[in-house]
Length: 260
Image (cartoon, rainbow, N blue to C red; front, side, top):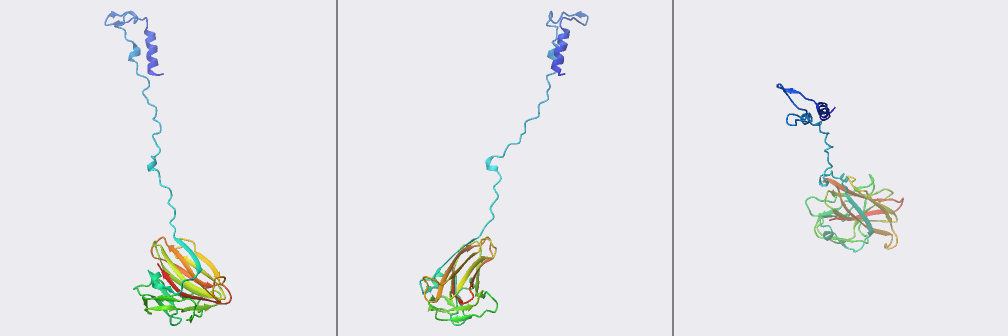
């Protein structure tokens, strides 16, 4: 029973009663209000226990919300292929970062921009022990004025070729967070060929396409320029471009590459 209820019961029980204090008889609580003490007034207050406070947890303010999961960084790798036009092509003007040309004098010739560390690698064969041959009479010409070991050339129609299904050429260039553009000058004769561009960190899907001679090409040979725009998601990566014969017969060839 709560204390306030107990006090009310006691007060009711004493109503109309008299008592003696120090030998003096009091009046009833109704007759002598001065001497009467309303027991209810002395009762202990209602239960002082306070109900447990509501849950004080509050949702975080909007600006404190947890950030969304960050998307996994991705690289960039887009490509295109087109019939080569504009001969002769000025490698020095186009290759502001680096350029390379193959087959100037013989099958091992590798001319490039005269810089301390070339960015475009020499080619490696796509298939071990394939035969590489130099040709000096292509329909497409190349010019440069800042090269090494051949310092200058004007409308050089040289290049290298190979034959057989799967044979071809492979080069690499650096890749990091910087967006770069590489142009790869290649072609074929009486064949089909496939180009593949691949980032070493696989942060973007490969670019790959197959081409062959057709409308717009001159004679039996076809000339193509492959343009790849790319970057990786970290430093120290590389981009590899492979040009391979995908038919049983014919030839594929390689001329030059430029990097911006």
